[in-house]
Image (cartoon, rainbow, N blue to C red; front, top):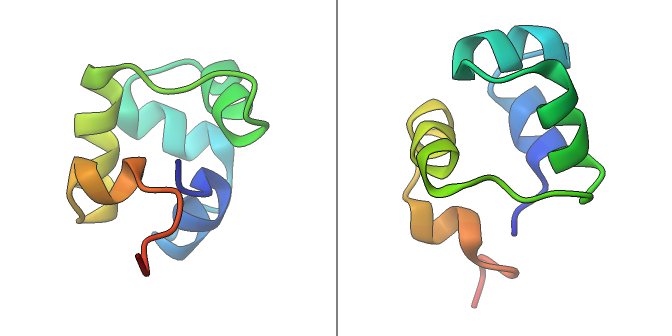
Length: 66
């Protein structure tokens, strides 16, 4: 799984609150994803791909250079 915090910041979201609001999830959910305590469900993965302008496959890869 990609580093969501890095991708979030690169996408222009300085706070988890802003990001969570755009995705329609609680801020605590984003915090858990970023701390790797939980993984996004398929619906959230689709939204993450939309926000990050990438494919779901890219999100799931451990090493995107592979």
